[in-house]
Image (cartoon, rainbow, N blue to C red; front, side, top):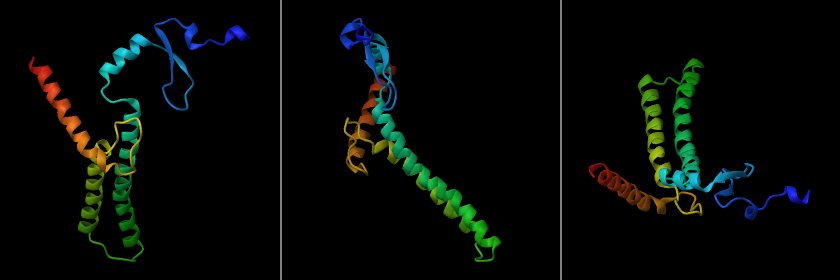
Length: 146
């Protein structure tokens, strides 16, 4: 049984052991594939996961609220509790969906690109992420013009 366990040094030089997520089992990854995939992917996976969590919260809650406005209005009108104009229902749900749309941008721009997750709200990351986005567009325009 001693020889069954392989160490990282026992593997060929072009192979390494990696983890795709916190809860997954280790898998063998070719170094050549990780180098080429890291160049193609501009956003590291830990940053993308952080963005996804922020987007889920800042977009999900207002979107669910927008749908809840319709359900709440229907309940109040059908039970005779309140007389709500359809315009009020439409405008208030539209505002919730608009906040959700703004939350999408906020979720992307407020995520920290450092390995450390940063603060809860991430206001300090917005300016640096906007500059990072501008630089990426400039680089993309230079590549397309050459």
